[in-house]
Length: 134
Image (cartoon, rainbow, N blue to C red; front, side, top):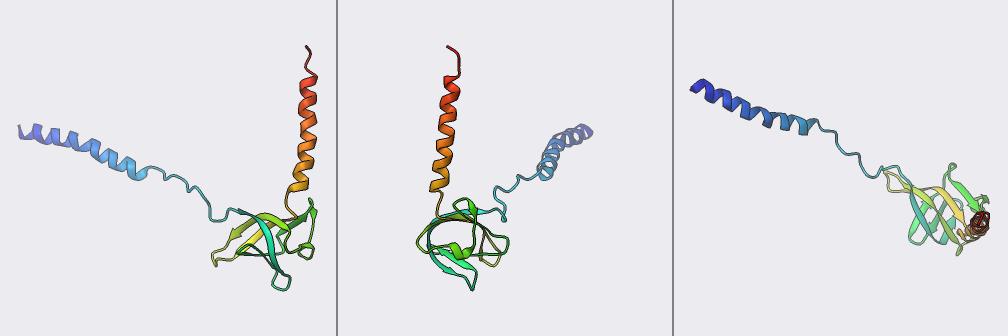
């Protein structure tokens, strides 16, 4: 009788141990956001400091580096071409030191480029529906 009790206890304890082992060996879910992903920004250009290689949009100051891609009207540009008060957008990374480093800066907003793109795609959509035989 004692042997059967020990045997029954061993059988009942085994699944519990298997569950504990499975839960500790389970892979962890990947993090949703990486620290090095870029974040978007947009607004009006408040100030430019060519000596410090920074530009301020609203309350945030972005550091411009040699790898920052700057464009204006869809063409490569320089920080010297930026005008205070104009719309600006882009992407940045936040460093461990808290500095916001711009990875891309688009001067002058998105307006003209998107309007041209929409005009090009609208006729294509219309022409493809007109070419369907009746």
